[in-house]
Length: 301
Picture 1 (tube, rainbow, N blue to C red):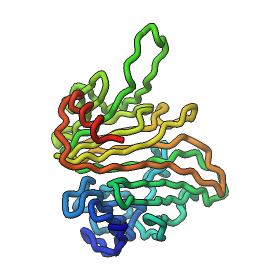
Picture 2: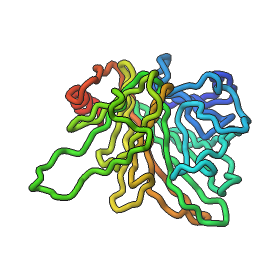
Picture 3: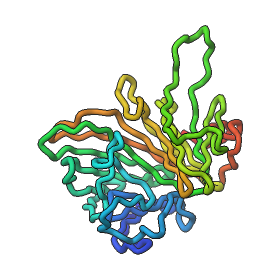
């Protein structure tokens, strides 16, 4: 089946676009955004979180997380980052997908765009996140792509391969921790080759950032596996202590986040940040890093 794009209603919003290749599907909102609100296999569960009290609504005076996948500006700032995204967006056709364009920001003059493409014969999705400075002043920023995953799953984070002390005397990893992160709370498995971070309905906020060079991170939910592929730019400057990957979780969800390099975006210029998603099902359950290694070798590109 070739890619199908059709208008559908979803959870109270009447104006959405559904992209499907017959096996997997996305639903992209038009009444708010830019946002992907659903990602999963056709007629099966949404792998992304949904906040029921916020679905189908728009025009609120305060920012709402809603769920799904969104595009933000880093570093995190209450004024620029949390600017409202609750009004209609423009949607245009692309070869292999669609482009969703937010109105120009009234706060900083930056316009957010997501180019969303889906492969015909593989369960692969490409998301190009674009920030364009339509204002008159340069803006320091980084593109920040955040996917709010449905609760109950585990984030699988590969670590660099081990090397001997004699081989290298300097560090080869950089982590950023937040004041509320607690490695003793039971959600974390700190292994030698992988980190596992489990979403737990009884646990509050926890967050970790990594200068991630391994190229992929996964989220397993039941027997489904969602994988993000993304780049590290050697020599670039990154936000939050130099990290390009972050994960955040609380009682309701877990976020899988990637960041592009920090730049000063001049008027009329754009910056792009690309993620490639893979979807799998009937994946063996991962509880240990040995199991994570088996899954990674079999499923991850």
